[in-house]
Image (cartoon, rainbow, N blue to C red; front, top):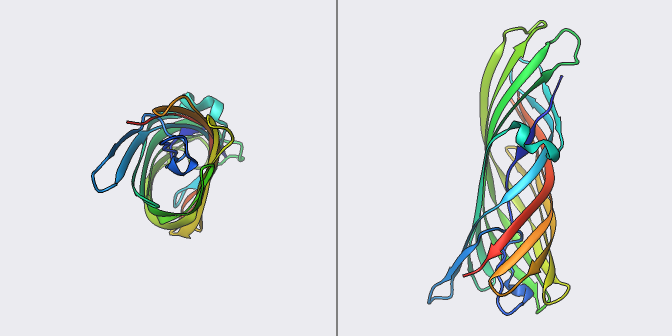
Length: 263
């Protein structure tokens, strides 16, 4: 059976901060509405809510009910999105950084089932929280580029309700949830094409509670001045979790945009 949904989440995103146009001063890629402050000890702090419009595809299941196939593109995002909240923050001291990312989305949708007499229609409601806490170290940089290795933990918490109308499962409805933790590691970097135009991106992969957890992105940015920058790009995130009949095996992908403000 197939149900069409679209989600918007955010994710590890991009916080950009600039100082004299150096690539080494780009902190996290792709961030809107950044607020940053420095302490006398040399620490800098960044906070940024941002937006990612992503399509979702994959399989979701609960114990005792048929598996639901999710397949939708990002162009229908507002048809099924109920709530989408996301924010990222960073604390940095020289080449060291501490990164936090929080994502919460709630979505719903309904469609007919093409699988024989299993059901006439299926309704799915799901809410997802994903939080990343990591640490980074810059191992290569000059005035044009910067590369950083990152390691951390991602916590997932998923609640979903499946309701079936018609067919052999007519009237069946079940709610279930799962929470798990994955260890993540990867790279992020930036490169200035000109003093105004730059590229940023990252790639993370991990596992733990899930069999596989991955996240990749690439963006291009434009630096208006020392305070304001804009970025746009594409991001994809996937997770494959299966335990005791609860299945959450999905890929989210779509465009991401942001505005970076440095204070």
